[in-house]
Image 1 (tube, rainbow, N blue to C red):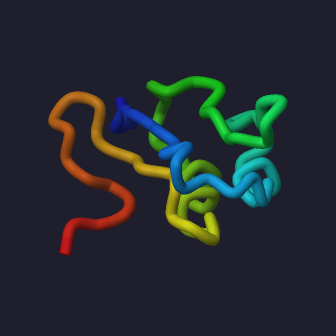
Image 2: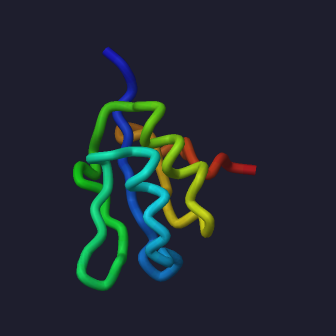
Length: 77
């Protein structure tokens, strides 16, 4: 069984670019204010969700390991 991720969007940073929708179709939705929300905050680890986080122009998407809380993206420096 693979890793499980917890995905959050910092809506104070989100600018509604829609890049998350482009890179992870079905993984995110925009609300009426064009703020992104993960469709499943707890999800299996996957390349599309990681690509969405990596391509977010303001790094509003935060991914952690669900069980440990360890940072997946952005990586801890």
